[in-house]
Amino acid sequence: MNTRRIVTILSMTISLCLLLLPGCDEGDDCQQMCQKTKDCSGGAFTFSSVDDCASQCRDAPPDAEGDCMLNCDTSRSCEDWAECIMDCADMGSDTDTDSDSDSDSDSDSDSDADTVWTDTSTGLEWQNPDSDSLFVWGDAVTYCNGLEYAGSTDWRLPTLGELRGLIEGCPATETGGECGVTDDCLEWSCYGEPMEESPCLYPCFVDEGPADGCYWPSNLEGNCGAYWASQEDPDSSELALSVFFDDGMISSMNKEMEELYVRCVREAK
Image (cartoon, rainbow, N blue to C red; front, side, top):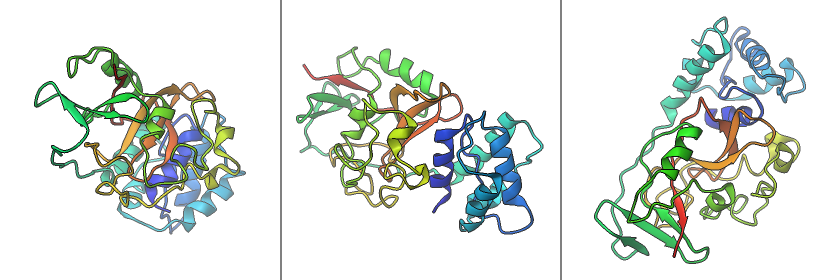
């Protein structure tokens, strides 16, 4: 299990995200990290015990991100410590954003800069490429609501179901797949039990999607990473829903600490 999968699972169930350190193989590093996770979780610690958490942590293979996290001081405040953890996790989040325009795609354009892609199966028109900027959730909502793009002003942040409708090549999280999280079922219970074995969280291999490694239609361009959905997590006011297009994963992320990509949507006229 890689670092990002572990920390994303935790971010869904605790008020701070990216709090579990994988690859600890000496001393009590895992124990300390798991204790810090529990202390900062706001009562949402999902492991049966700190020892159980530490055991799973020790089973994870070491990597560069984990080595960086080892240097995050657990004596710091939850906020400062989580910021250190996220800085380390960002080491592995860089993605290749280069893409060439496909003149034969289903995109319409009012100008060279403002191109869209219309999904004829849903009637939705998508900003294409994406915003190419990272936002916390609140700023993502504001960005789409205020967007003037391709001659339209009625853009909005897509719902989880609409984003999920873009997933291709990852059966578990495609629309109608085994993952139970939909616009009508956003609670943690919808992920299934135990949560760490949810098909929403372990869907497909990273960067092996059908569209240059991304799990979305070949007509889409942009950053193959995590995107905000419009819904807040009903089980935690500190989280909001998101979709990862590098591995098809669906999860909740911390609204104020995580910065994700944005692809605005509107109903095609």
